[in-house]
Length: 394
Image 1 (spheres, rainbow, N blue to C red):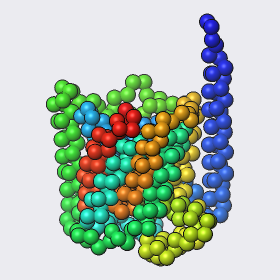
Image 2 (image 1 turned 90 degrees about the vertical axis):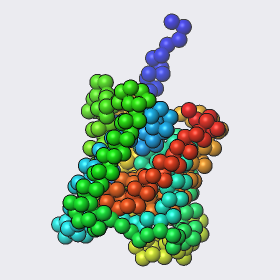
Image 3 (image 1 turned 180 degrees about the vertical axis):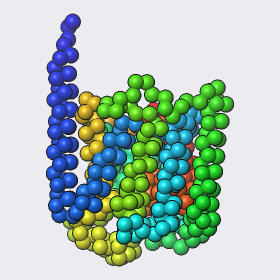
Image 4 (image 1 turned 30 degrees about the horizontal axis):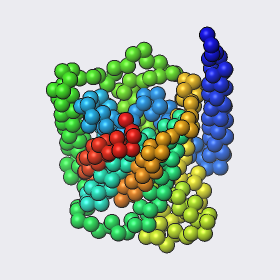
């Protein structure tokens, strides 16, 4: 042999050992801090986020790639796994939300208006998903696993979120309907049953389309030699595990899992540090949000869980010896990451959330805005898929 691969292997192992030490140390320090100063509940939410990061990485559970696969090839295992995830969660969520509290903690669902803002914001978000290369949770876990292009998407996501908060008031009062929850209109059993019928309809439509195009349907359990510690996990396992993450979040935080509100908060705090006061913007004048500007990000549930997602993905990648960041990012792909991130952030603020808060949380809460968000974002994702070749993205 003319060249030896031993130095390269040694470097790979050293890099992954560093990633493992960093993720473990940061996890222990942050968990200790949260438990000591903010209580067991905040520390527990951080650990739930950590588990989510591991799950997302191990199961390669991405909303973006799953929707793109449907648009390009008709293969729908990822989309069908999402329907199973949503069905499982709605069965557990609905009675919990209906009772109003759990162990003395008020519980609410992700309920928002069904209006033009959701339609436009979700469509914009869908385009951003494909250009940026990930959704909200996808951006965090792939960045944590060492994808440096996704760090650029995340920066754009934060900037887009700030822009969205600045123009937020212009999108209020658009034509539409007040929040509609199926469980409020039809009762708990009716809300669950109607939601399940809709989810089954999407599942069967996707499966039928896949069989028509390919003659078979790929199972959501189709993984060769799965490993609990090293992955990959079947999509079905990831779907059920993420349902657990959302249920745990509801029980600990009193509301469903959310991701992108923290991006707006981080951006606002960055502006404050350079002397730009955002507290008078209409978005931040709402009491609950205004209060977050004057406290540490560690008081914010979404921020704490997002830190957990990043560290969980870094931990999982390092354990699998797959933490391998690369600085080689083609210029067009870099441009797509910036543009995609801006669209993601702006769209999420306008549409009352992202694929986690609006789609996952909304449908699981039997809110009709979650279904409108899904339809509009899926349409935007299909458009974004067609735009990807312009930026040299496969």
